[in-house]
Length: 367
Image 1 (spheres, rainbow, N blue to C red):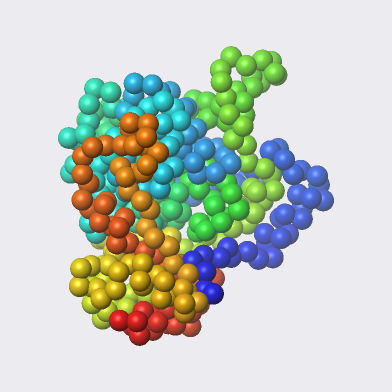
Image 2: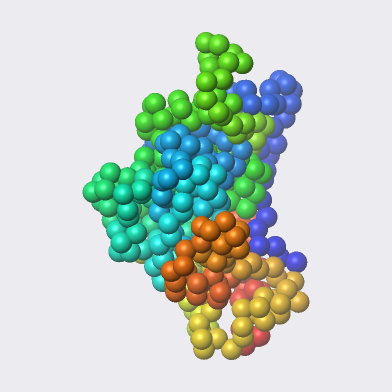
């Protein structure tokens, strides 16, 4: 079976991890955490990094640090993983959905202003599947209405918009280092910001809101969102090879498009002018003239030893949000369509040309 994604780990990760074990620095203290935070934040163009347990807690921490809470509204794309909406709900805020662009699958800036109210506090642009959002347009709207921008860059390590790294635009930005991400430490996340006070607040909140001068005295509710030194060791080793991993993803995307370009009824991922798509996942959207349903294609590929995944379910269709009265009644046709018709192919950094050709040849044979 060719899996959707396999972590790409090597000798450097093993060496750094062994160092943690030999020195007994295995929990949430240790030099690898600060090294990882400093290296990754600088790479993305932010001053401070705050390592967390995963991408979801990074989003939760970012919103909590901004003091977003009950009565507030947070604008986000209707098409994203559930974590984007859950983070707002955890804080007591209401997610407000905006449909996405049909080509990039990112939040459509032209539709944002119509969703802004007096309760709106922040916009969360999600760099979907590794393609950066239109950050100029989003930042312009944010400045006009004095809103925070919280970048969800969980899928966009190394992506660029007009020469600037994803995660370097917002007041605060969030990343995930889950096993299938471009760089990974198994689980893990990070919050980035250039605001010193905001960074200090994140560091305090993620550590149960301990006070430096009076330990075990808590004046505010905090979280246990601490990354371990062992995770950070793997993350740092991965980060030190990030350009290799980004280039592998981009090279594989070129091969997929080359081998499948003549197959009718498929919408391919794009790379707009002045952006660098890192193709976290190589996604396809099946059009009406494609001869198989998405499920038929996925089942037939599985029979050939090829694992695939559906696109995320649109947030406005999530049962849990409907149950608690937070699912929008509006229709979001683009989000609904790509959620219904989209799938992604194996996309890990360890994928080779022969495997990609076999996958593409299999698709051609099936139709």
